[in-house]
Structure formats: C-alpha cells, structure tokens
Amino acid sequence: MNTFGLPPGFVFGTATAAAQIEGAVHEGGRGESIWDAYARTHTNILDASSAAIACDHYHRYAEDFDLLSMLGGQVYRMSIAWPRIQPLGRGPAKPEGIAFYHRLLDALLDRGIEPWVTIYHWDLPQALQDAGGWQNRDTVDAFADYTRILRDEFGDKVAAWMTVNEPVVHTGVGHAIGRAAPGLMLLGSAFVVAHHLLLAHGTAVRILRETLSTPVGIVNNHSPVEPATGSERDAGLAALYDHYHNGQFASPVLTGAYPPQLGEVAGISFEVIRDGDMEIISVPLDFYGVNYYFPTRVGAAPPFYPVPFAPKEYVGLPVTDFGWPVMPYGLLKILTELKTSYPQMPPVYITENGCAYDDGPQGGLQGPGGALQDTRRIEFLEQHLAAIGEAVAAGIDVRGYFHWTLLDNWEWQEGYTKKFGLVRLEPATLERIPRASFYRYAEIIRSARGPNPT
Ligand code: FCB
Image (tube, rainbow, N blue to C red; front, side, top):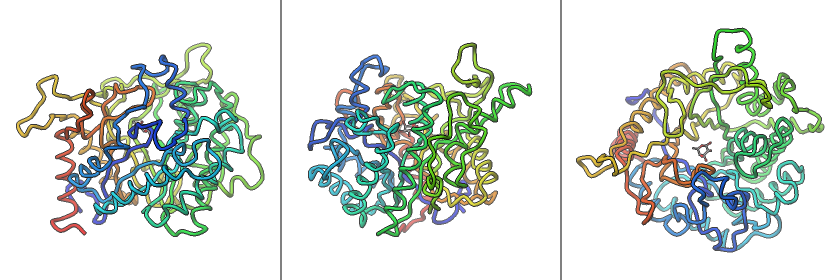
C-alpha cells in the first residue's frame, strides 16, 4: 500500500477527449462533428470559440506525449474522433484518419504508455445527426460499423476499450435540455437517446470480443445525491434524481433492467425497448469506468420546470471555477453506493476526476521552481486519491485513476474559460507550461510505482 492506501499494481494516468484537444478540424479529410456545428452558433459557447484549434494536439501530440513520459503514468485515456475515421459517419475508413491514430498509438507505445481508447466521446458526425442522430436506431448500426473499423485497425495496439463516455451527460445536457451539442430539447423523451447509446455500448462490446480479448468497459458519470432538506418530499425527489442520474445508466448495464422509477419522470417511456435489447446492454464487462466530479443536492423544482427535481446549492463547500462543489468524500460515497446496489460490479477504474482552477501566472502565482502554484488542484488530487484509498480499504476493487486532464483544453460549451490542465496552455502561443500539480502528480506516481517501474 502506498501513501494513499492504493494497492500495488494500481495504475495512474490522465484522460483526454479528441474533440477537446485535437484541433485541425479541416485536416486529414475529417468530417464535421455535431460540436463543430453547435459551436457555429456563437451564443452556444461561453466565449464564442470553437474547437478548430484547441490544443493543436493533432500536430503537437509528440510534445504532449513527452509530457506524459515526464509524468510517468502507465496509462493514458484518449478518444478517437469518429469524423476522422468516417467523415459522414458511414462508409469506408478515411486513410488519413486511420494513419493519424496509428501514429498516435505508436507514439504512446514507443514511450511505454498503455493506450486506453474511448470509442465515442460525444463527437457524432454531423451527417448522422442530420439523419436523426441518436434518436434514430440506425445510428447504432453505424456505430457498430465504426467499431469494427477500429477493432480491425487498432486492435493490437489498444490496451483497453471504453465504448461510450458519460451517456447521462450526452443525453441530459445535449439532448434533453439543449445546453450542449446537438442542442436538442427533448426533455423526458431524450430517453430514446439514452437507450440507443446503451445499445451502441453493448453492441460494441460484442463486436470487440468477436476477435479480441482486450478488456472492455463503459464510462459513466456518477454523482452521490442527497436531499436539500430533511423533508419527505425532498427525500423522494433526491431518490428520483438518483435513479435518473446514476441508475439510468448503471442499472441496465450491470443488471439488465432500467430502474422502474424512471417512468415517473415526465416524458420517459420504455416503449422504445425491443426484445433482446436488455441482453445486449447488460453484456458482462471487464471493468466499470466511473467519472466523478461533484455531489448533487436535490430539492423541488421551481414552477413550470420540466422535471420535478432541481439541483440546490451546497452551503459551506468550496467550489471550483466551474462552480462545482468540492467533496472528495463524495467519491467514496458513490463507490460505496454502487458496490451496495451492484455487488456484481466488475473492477472499477476512475476514468475521470479533476477540477477547473485558473491558477496562472497572472496572480503572481509562479512558484520557486518556476511552476505555476495551483495548490488547490494538488489538494483536490491528493484528497480524491485518499478517498479511493478508503474505498479500497472498504473492499471495493478500484484499480486505477485517470486525472482529467493533461492540458487546458476546449471545455465544450464553456469554450476555453475552464482550465482543467495539470499543464497550462498559454492561449496566444499554445505553449505548454506544467503546473505545480503536474510535478506533484509525477512524484505521487513515482513513489507508488517504486524506483524501477516496469
Ligand atoms: C466530463 C467530460 C469531459 C470533460 C469533463 C470536465 O463530463 O467527460 O470531456 O468535459 O467533464
């Protein structure tokens, strides 16, 4: 056991997503994604930016992977941009796109870093959106073809596959309330999107397993929920929200059934489910990915709100620049709740966890070693690792941690305004400047791995 109570063999790394870092959206024959289209309406993005340049990782990946080598983690979570592989979401693979990801994967392997690949991190080809996107069951078939291409091309280089990233956020924010691409306001009827994303997940697992024995999992966002007051009404609303946010995606995957209580949310109808779907969705997994950022307090929604519950402010907890309350104990809490609800849960990896703090050079925060003193990120990191250590001590099989994220990047609808990087991205020059948290994380990894990591 190391300082944080993490077991031997526990792996460390960082996580990124293609759309947030690559840029080069018109290169290599890449097609348009729903995020390119969404960002064209400037009011959709907080700083009216787009991901056209982002971190220019497309051209600077070698430099970025040198940073990963300095950091010393064993694993790196990245995603593949579907519009680079199939610009219109269907048809033959684009050779430039394939070649680009071969270069990327080789560059990681050359540095002794295991590539953990997310197949879908929200960047649907716009052409598929024009044909109904995830509301259309045909998109599941398109996803199956895309997965076959990735499997056949990259199967011998990828160390672990993750099918879809955070379907709850993609469904809820992107399709129910219209605050992220593709910007639809389907409210409860966005459930059809949730179901198709989960079907895509299960279908992809089967396809990968036809020829590979590589570990496969899903990545779900989880948030422990508590009622805003001691009232019975708030307790009921908190329980309902818990079914919506946590149960809607964990339960079908881990037990083969949606929480029946979901039917109480206006607009959600189980009619979309066809015979055989739940078997596909609940195919056993090698691991379960948990993304944790913050807990949620739930109370009654204001009048004319589309759902009965609404998030309420935490009093007394520090918040990040995103306004997200910081509660490391929440990670232990949600892991414990998941384990209690799903005793059969496979080994867990924390596939994302991190915080937005703009501790840059502006405020005289440059430290003695030249590093930017992002003390709050260091504390966040250490406290969350300690929470994982406690979960391990309680018997929960957590095997790794991916910090979100390596570099400041394009944070979706927040544009470049939220800085999640262990490494600062200098906006004008795209220069990479490691923050103090980068060096601290490197030290933690080094001491956990021992002097001669293999
Ligand atoms: C998660 C997303 C990731 C990033 C972080 C801050 O919900 O998966 O891409 O935006 O939040």
